[in-house]
Structures are given as C-alpha cells and as structure tokens.
Image (cartoon, rainbow, N blue to C red; front, side, top):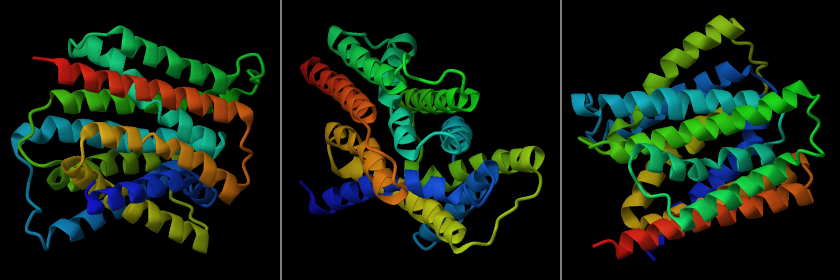
Length: 297
C-alpha cells in the first residue's frame, strides 16, 4: 500500500473519529447554528489559503454548479447543522454511529434512482445494518417519553439520509473540475444559508470566549473540514475505493472510543453490539458491490 496514502487514511480516521467528542465540547460554548457557521467559515478560508498558492483557486465551470449546490447546501450545511443540534442531547459516540449509517441508505437509493440492482448480498447488508440501528435504539428500553432524545436520534438518521442523497448525486454527476478545486465553493455555498439561519434562529452569536471554544473551532475548520477534505480527495486517488470505504468504517468506532476517553461516555453493550452490526452490514454492502463490479463484463 502507498505509504503516503495509508498515513493520510489513518489520519482521516483519527481526525473524524476524534471530532465527535470535540464537537460536543465546542457546542457547550456556542450555539449550534453559529458553530456550524464558524466551522464553515474557517474551512473556506483554509481551503482558499491552500489552493491560492497552487494557482487552483478559480471560478467553477457551469457544469459543476449543481453538485456544488448539492454538496454545499446538504452535505456541508444541513449535515453539520443537524448533527450539531443532535449532539446537544445525544452522546457523541452514539451520534457518530448513527450518522455513519449513510452507506446503508445509499444501497436502496441507488436501486431506486440509479437503476442499480438490489441484490441479495446488498439486501442482506442493509438488513444487518438496520438490525444494528434497532439494537442502538433498543425500542423496549428507549425512553420514548424523552422528546429531546427521540428528536436528537431522528436528526442523526436524517443527516445520514441527506449525506446518502448527496453521494447518489455525486455518483451520477459528470465532473468538469476536481473535487478539491470545488471544495471552497461548496463550503461557501453552505456557509451563506447557515449564517443567515443562525442569525434568524439564534440571534447574535454568543461565544463565551473560552480557550475550549477557540481550539475546537480551529480544529473543526482546519483539520476536520479543510485538511480532511483534501486528504479524502488524495486518498481516493491513490487507493482502491473498496479499501477507502472499508477503512472509513473505523470512524464511528473511533468516535465511540474517543468519546469514552475524552467525555467519559460508557462503552455500553448496546452501543458496541449496534456498532458491530452496522459495520458488518456496511462491509457486506461494500464487498458485494465490489464483487459485482468485478464480475461485470
């Protein structure tokens, strides 16, 4: 395996896995809409500073405008806002697991909208993953009277569905520029409506000026957004898609472990069993898809 790619892939898993408890820490010091706005603002600035000296900061071609709108508004804006809102009431480790159920929703979505066959292997993977979601919710032990918890868990699943929708759009899009060149524009497209919503819903930002808020925002904007996006594009070019997809299954596991270490969240049997089923289910979906592509004439 390419050493540079392997190093970047490991860094991505650590950066994104560790960011779930870091986001929860930061959200204790700033409203959720404004936290997303500042994160996107810092990320946009970081991407501009990265691409400008490379001579790659240019207006995007018209053919890429639809995917810029999709990724900016949904994958960056809506996903960040929904997860921030959920993290206020849902443990960070559990949030990471539910948000990363995305590949489970891509399989049936691809069958419905892209004409990809829902084979028995893919169906088995989806059912295994849904079994993991059911275990996480534990409907017989879940406190359905806790309205905030119900809404928070629902927001995370909605965020995963939105992410899946953007993946389907990306699959069907004919790229005119590289994803890296389009990244600052996607972040800018997400930044504007999120900032407007923040002002309307939450009023003026009320940061408490703490050191924790500063470092969590800097980490989110530079490492979890700008660096992670660049690293993801680089890794996807250097490694097989199957390797990357399966490696990203480590992110929710990292989120669970880092949340236990940083926030003292319990590694409950329910969380571990749900994670195992979801990871196994996603793995089955990814491996089935790889075998089918290999067998195709």
